[in-house]
Length: 72
Image 1 (cartoon, rainbow, N blue to C red):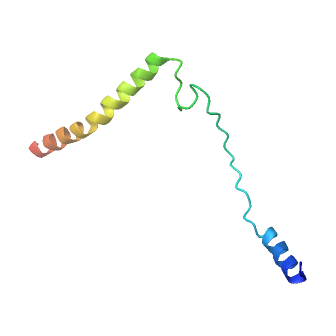
Image 2 (image 1 turned 90 degrees about the vertical axis):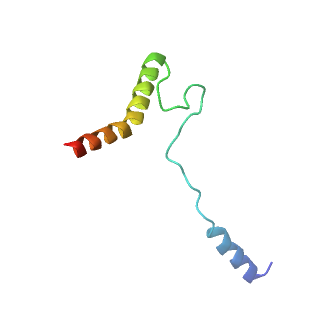
Image 3 (image 1 turned 180 degrees about the horizontal axis):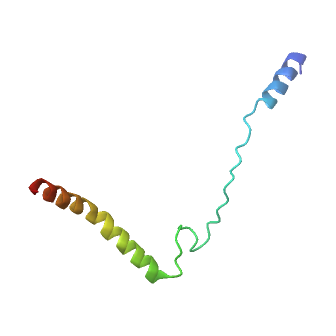
């Protein structure tokens, strides 16, 4: 191997992109893949129902408020 090839290989070896290290470690085991606590299913169901009702009702409340404001 020539001197020119050796120096080129040495430079190429050192110019490799550094490995990306992730600072987050998440264990994907059974029943641990969701960001919620599934042990109390009644509380989870209540929270989901409240969230759904509130998020679905906000546009209707806004329309009612605007109609009431326009009538006044």
